[in-house]
Image (cartoon, rainbow, N blue to C red):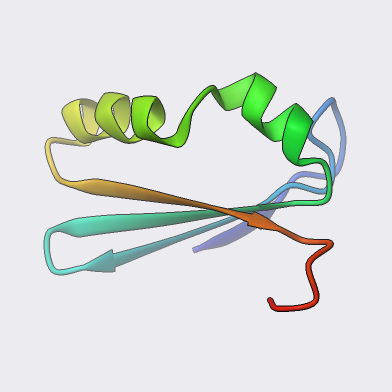
Length: 70
């Protein structure tokens, strides 16, 4: 699943979610990493919260969309 936010404080944020067996991988790609980190907190805290909520391992990858290596 792939989503792109088009308005609000996180406009432009791209979210991609993939299941690999029981594990859920969520990639957050943002041009504004500071705003993303401010909204979601640390990736490890978000992983822990989502793992409990979804009852499966969750990995969060935060990607700088300004970086040449995408």
